[in-house]
Image (cartoon, rainbow, N blue to C red; front, side, top):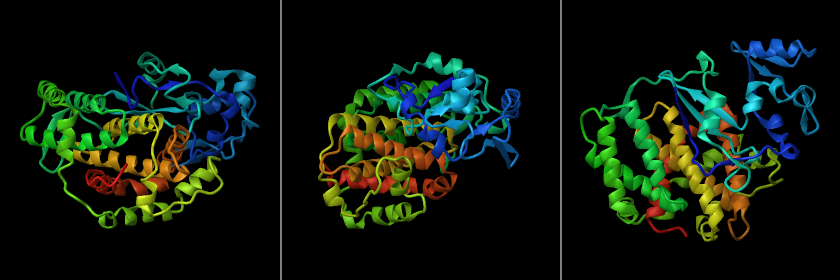
Length: 374
């Protein structure tokens, strides 16, 4: 089995028990299995789960939460905890071709690029191989669409190499990453036309992209011409997302990041705020993580690219709204927590926002290419 991670080698993690209670309170669902239920019932507990749609979840609020501590963990050790809780903030999607894609959730305060132990691929393989239920598998054959509209196909191994190779090329500056992603996409569109794409062709294309260099690829994306801010359509899309019941302000309050967050449509004002180096690094890392996350989704490379850019736009805007005058690492960190909370913990928000992200991503790259940003 192949194990892929959506995050790079920079990711670090440390368990922080003093902060390890908020996820237990705000997660939408904590799935458990019947084997786990029987094991915990044998310890003398009951009435802690509920059945919905043929699956089992912990009742909310969690019966095992005592203050900031898990009663199961405290009284019976880490191994006694439910798998979802023990693995958190990591989660896995298993494709039916045997690939496990491991993702991380930034709502956990123990996730970082600066503190804690490095999260190694070996650790992920030990923790996640062979422990995903069959009904959670995502259909993904050995041959998949590279571009759905043209009908162009690609082997799964070639697609993995393409996505991971692109992610490795993106710089640690958010706007440069966003524009370069589109530049790469345009260059690939001109060279990967027709036929079934295999691993050797992908490797050759990635080498050509590396030889082209950042400046040449950035220029590919910057040829969209001038775009007026008030004609971008971002207002309408953001208005729908922010006006939805699960808005960023709602998430910020639930995550105890802020009691009240004011979102504005004044793009000139919000994009005049400088962004420090660590905030840039974190937001760019999240863009690459979102791009690799799309490997688990049955979309083609174009949809994956613009979906990623939409999520990046959404997250950056939240970070800028949280900052008073300068966007610092903590603002970016909190924005990631808010975005991940909404995108990964609430199915109702996902169903509303996910179809809008590709369109938002298209507007975002036009906005950046127009030069109307800092």
